Image 1 (cartoon, rainbow, N blue to C red):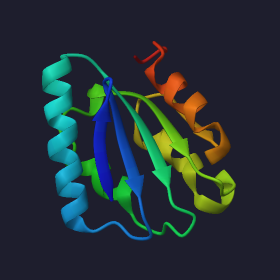
Image 2 (cartoon, helix red, strand yellow):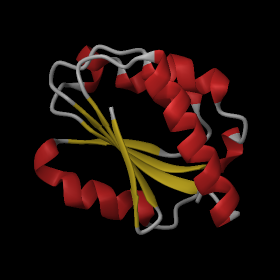
Image 3 (cartoon, rainbow, N blue to C red):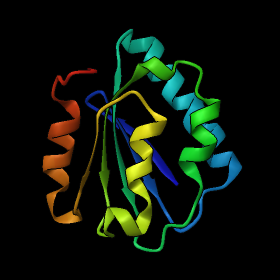
Length: 118
């Protein structure tokens, strides 16, 4: 998993599998961003075509500032029903939307826009 932050947007690129150490690293990066911003943190999550990790299950219970999630844009070419991404919005209070890879820039812009929960 690759993690970065650009212009206040947390970027997560998840490969085939996500390890526990990846989740631990993400939690540390996210919590640092939330403290620094003193606001919600928008996020773009790009899922590899062969992604099969349990990222959300692990993160849901590890992130302490759960109210710090801003909009979450998921970039994924799989149908949401196939991937199971429709359940993500039940795990977080943040707005969530799925975009195809061809609309990644649109996904970034949407995540950074001030939404209902941002």
